[in-house]
Length: 251
Image 1: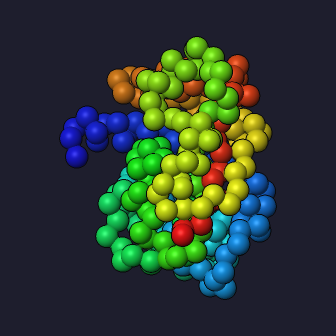
Image 2: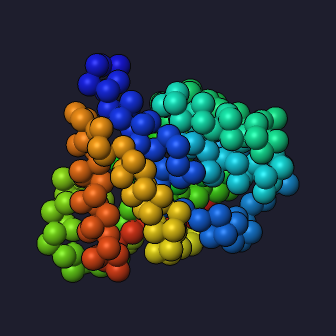
């Protein structure tokens, strides 16, 4: 890891480490999604890839009462997850794993349910599916949330911002096409509601930024500035883009 990468990771840990979520999400939404999954396995082998501080990992462990491999590359986030799992009495089920989720050396067909919230973008959606398909058993299920365009008429300010921040961001139709080409059948799409952005992520994040901003400098100040731009854009253009959960079956 370079010095710049280490400084960036520290900035991200400082900003997000104390939050319940590192991105938009909602437990009730996730539980409804899980209840409808066509899992053919009574005791699924589960992995939460890009787990952050573990909101999804804890929910999965509690819902299935089964072990969850919680994969994250940033040690500070995994430490928070370990503490949260211990406090919830789930440390026997949640298994924090420091690893690159794009280069896992697990055997083919080693998991039945792959969960990933807001993390696939680091590999691009297609790149994540290409790397993760082999991990799933045939007929295994992947539930992956991905930033997606809801329209082809993309407002210029949002298009310009995301062209810089996430050039590979695609439409829902394009992502479904990519899933089919990577060995998945698309079972369902569900858009994350706006409340999952504001109530569970952006408002707590704004409070955290207000706390850190007076003394922030360097990379942390830059991350805060970019985050404020992102929030302002979502406030104006949330009907044009957002997170979509793609429920996929390995075929």
